[in-house]
Image (tube, rainbow, N blue to C red; front, side, top):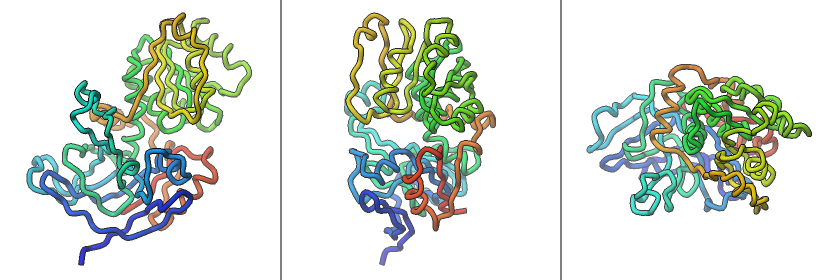
Length: 344
């Protein structure tokens, strides 16, 4: 009889529960990880609510991972040592599509992300290829923040953000905070953060934003103009995914500016398309993250300049892991990040 391990699984929209699954068996080139901490992602919330078009049910969520190497199969390089702390790059790549051949495997046409197109890490143990494991001398809670921060880091890289830029980041959730931290702390840009929640704007300041704006303020445009010498920001990173924020990004960016979209639009967006041409804009999508983005986040977290503790809204024990997702769905606005403590 195969050994069973505990997991948390979304059975169908609105239903999540603790279950037991078969213990994974590691194959050559794989590492068995003891999962210590998993962060709930917005995609997990969307899956629970039934709004994630990429998911089939039932699905074990979780791709924001802090773990310990438990066992290494043969063909794993010697630097991966049992007992070492690690995180996981949770995306697959086919190696053959146009994105992969262009060196942009994060945008693989056939990508499967842990917890989305395939079962994720909200279980006691997971087995992954050694190439997806990133070693990092960080605390467990920091390890589980690397993946979501890396998505924001990738957006800043896509936007070619530099120290010469003033950047507007719309949305100060976890991904937006990553974009803020990369733009300000890693790249030296002047960052203006916009959100509707005062607590998130305060957190944005700690993540590196020099200025913060209430996106609902009727004088938002005038304030942004004043902060940018009447030109608008050089780049706008959109991390919300609403119709209004998609439009705002194009309207507020300066002439010859760059717009980076991370947020998935929830509905079709209508544009004043002349802005695309008159401003000669670069419109860029940003998907997932690269191993290099993971490494950049690790380097930043090692400096202790990013407010990791303040970013985590709450950490819940394993027994409350399923209920935490239900409660988040009932009150999403007050949460930046929930961590589930899988093991000590």
